Image (cartoon, rainbow over all chains, first blue to last red; front, side):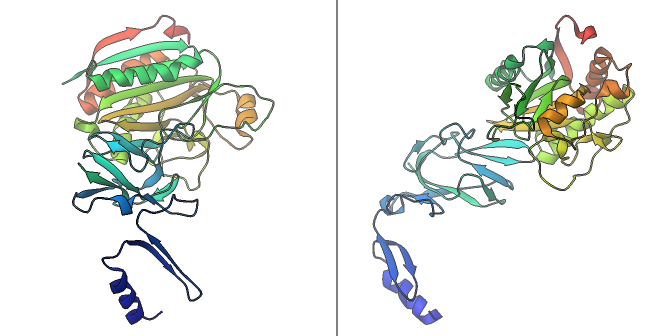
Amino acid sequence: MNLKTLKDLIELIKGTDIVELDWTPERIHIVRGIKPRADKTERSESRAGAASQDRPTVTVTSPLVGTFYRSASPETQPFVQVGDRVTKGQCLCVIEAMKLMNEIESHVEGTVNAILKQDGERVGYGDPLFIIEEL
Amino acid sequence: MQGWRLIVDGRCPSESNMPRDLALFEEVARGSLSGCLRIYNWQTPALTIGCHQKGFISHDPGLEIPVYKRPTGGGAVLHIDDITYSLITPLKGRFASGITETYAVIAGVFAQALKTSGLDVRMGLSAPGFSEVCFARTAPVELRLDGVKLMGAAQLRRGGILLQQGVIPRRVDSDLLARTFGPGVRVSGILDILPEFRVREFIANLKTGFQERIGLFFEEEFFAPGIDSW
């Protein structure tokens, strides 16, 4: 696909309800509206199609380099799921670095719109972790 | 200067140590305590593993040893006869800094106390490689004696409160160590190097170190009986 074709494609889907587009020369896969439930190959979870376009969103980023964990321990449930309402100060995840378990808190009240990292994934300073739609 | 609580608990039932550390963490988080240093040992051998370790399988599958999860990170630690500590503080003052800096601040206090007690420890450089075993790897600012890691430490930060859990082996059971971690993990015990080392004297040196290096003093002190016969 050349650059002009790519630009044309982007223009084509702007303003539509297409939330995901996967193109190869053999096929094109489009997801419209609310994304189907993520399978193992998905890199992130989101409810992008259901997000209100009017409410602001906040991206929670990693304050350090480390390993991202969604729960307090492997045996416990994740701190949050997509769609959960969170309060300011509520723990969203843990990042382990240099044997430090660092609990990352939400600095806004809102709804978890997207979880952008997988459990056990290495993250860098400033990497986006969550998108929260503010109340 | 702020006043902390010093708790010297002595040899405690192994299953009680992590819950006790967490209870003190909650007290500091609630504001009931301005900070706390707890020093303790283990009545029976036990393993503690880091918060996100998914269990631990001993090198000798026939070895039966209880495993407890720490609230802090890091790798597996075999506790036989240790000076184990938990330091709990709001993240402010000398503790309001990055990860390496806070490890260095605390390591500096322990290094001074150990040196005054007769052990020529040095701050270690990071050793390459990863291991599930705490004493098989050295992170920056960890203390070494004659090239061998002497003190391990790990942290939890939650809601503006820091918990650092650390351990300095007093005696090493080489057979149990090998059965747990396999050959090749070198651990030094203080009493194997300096038989005249005394915990009470070391704690006095720690208090001096906290005061001189951080400006911290202990308002309250609780000593469990039997510290001199650890």
